[in-house]
Amino acid sequence: MNTAMPRLLQTVPSALTALRANKGRSLLTALGIIIGVAAVIAMLALAESASAGMRAQLAGLGANVLTVSPGSTQSSGARAGTGSVDTLKAADVDAILHAVPGISAASAVVAGNAQVIFESKNWPTRVMAVMPAYQHIEDWRIQQGIFFMSQDNLDSRNVVVLGHTVASNLFPTGTSPVGQVVRIRNVPFTVVGVLASRGGSFGGDQDDVIFVPLQTGQVRLFGSTTANQIVVEVADNSQMNTAVPRIQQTLRQRHLLQPSQADDFSIFNNNDVIAKVQQVSQMMTVLLGSISTISLVVGGIGIMNIMLVSVTERTREIGIRLAIGAQPMDVLAQFLVEAVVLSVLGGAIGIAFGSSAALLVSTFAGWPTPSLLGAIMLSFGFSAFIGVFFGIYPARKASRFDPIVALRYE
Image: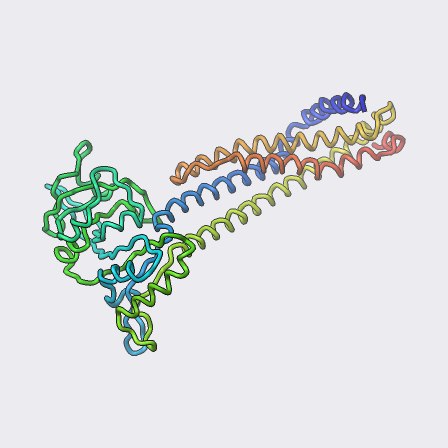
């Protein structure tokens, strides 16, 4: 036992000398591991980064939020799309808040497009007429000023909250929009707040929007007494399943629907969408990791193939070593060390390439910076295992040579 470690240490420089003697072949052998490790790190890190970016976008949908949309019309057996008939009203919000337990907030929404004008500048954007609770439901944060209050809605005041994109396009840098007057469809509105930026979501700019009180929008901008949708926040996720049928029952009673009649509205659960997207994201991470791992296995097979060739080429060398007193374990250790060194060296280079690729792609794509530690540890450990696993067979073959037969080999 005392001589095992020194003998093993003596095989390391011998193995390194053998690898340096065939630098080109050693590099080509390690190339499979380099590509495999780089692919594993890049794929796993980018999948995690993309998932984090998607989770951030999904957060904009709001957790524990139900969206009630108007129903559809039917003519001669053909049904139009959801929202093709106006069936929701602001009074439905009050009914839901009073009749359905576990509801923490709700808001009717009326939306449309309009040109916003400030002095000589104008900007086309989406106008959303909402109740003050909408800010909390959709988790909009204020950068400047305030969000309008309940009294602003009750009094139909001409106040507006600007999204970050609208504010930056209408007002020069250094000028506070709060207190300024803008015109929407030729109606003057006083800016009371500017929203903090939320960035893009599913190909759209979340910040390209403005908010006005619901009653103000219905009376002065859209001339509508109905709502495009109602958003409802449930206090706890455990109450989501019971809230849906209660809302359905409440709206059916308010809309005087008979038991034989279909709902003239639809209820959309944001949590279902979030869960499904996260599930798909996890499946893609596993799939990408599995595909990139295949290249590591292919690299390991390449190492085994080259080591078998090396064993054949160095048969006489092995015979001489065994003849002058080397133990079979010494020969096994040398070839196993060569395989592990090739694999670990390839893993180190692959880590550098894979990490750089992951950071560059995530930066250009605008995704969150990926966490590389887990992917690096996994791929490096797997590359070392590949070296041992695929190097053991050539090493064992070399250690079992008959010295006399090996010395006769030409």
